[in-house]
Image (cartoon, rainbow, N blue to C red; front, top):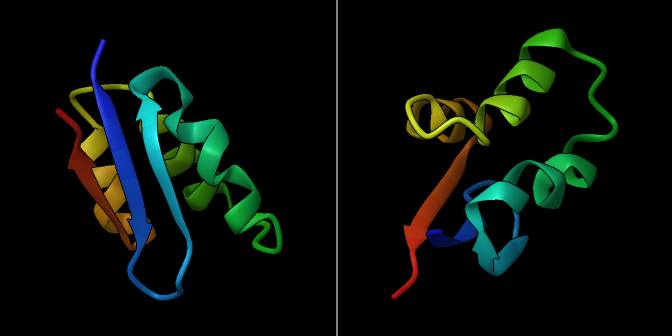
Length: 67
């Protein structure tokens, strides 16, 4: 299982060394004030490897694989 660190490009938020299965839940609180279906779909897509990069870009996140 891969690990990632996530950085929000618009704020100073970051989550370090997360297992890929935990990415969506780690960032969900960051977007709680937004009640938008597209944002919710993108958050959920962080859990899908094939959609992860596009979802992160949509959300303004940088994903960095950890060793």
